[in-house]
Image (cartoon, rainbow, N blue to C red; front, side):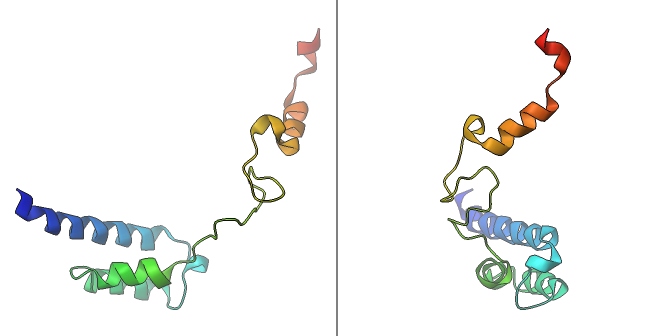
Length: 101
């Protein structure tokens, strides 16, 4: 059973990379068209060259401290919903005036 483990790991990485290429939007693909990346991953997946190339250079990755606003504070730190002013404003808009009575 243990002798099949390397084959199964290679197969798992190959399948994961293939699905990742297919699910990545075209505008997030770097260096080559998406169709070419699919072919590279499929052709060179057995020796892991295609999947490794895809993971290293093919897809735009988000930087760690980007702070793009989605639940994040001014410095890019995570903010709890009850401390997030945008979230609290949304609650005020959704509130039903009949609940005050």
